[in-house]
Image (cartoon, rainbow, N blue to C red; front, side, top):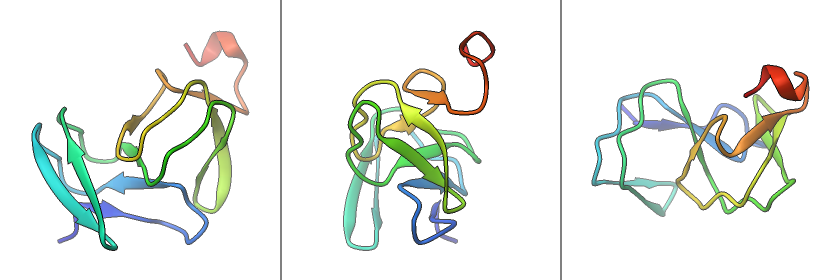
Length: 92
């Protein structure tokens, strides 16, 4: 079973399908990823480098924006992404 899944061809995040352990190396479509921290099932990781303000796309639609620079393979969550749909106070 693949540990990383891309749900839609336009997505710039991958979904973790099997828990990733700290220190793990994975290859997805020829790209090498190194994970310094464990990442749980269902969480997102960046497929590519994302600039501050860049849209985060999942299911082929934007779900938020990068609130800071996100490196390829970084865990994408409330610490580095803001929702484009929820008020700021609800996403923190």
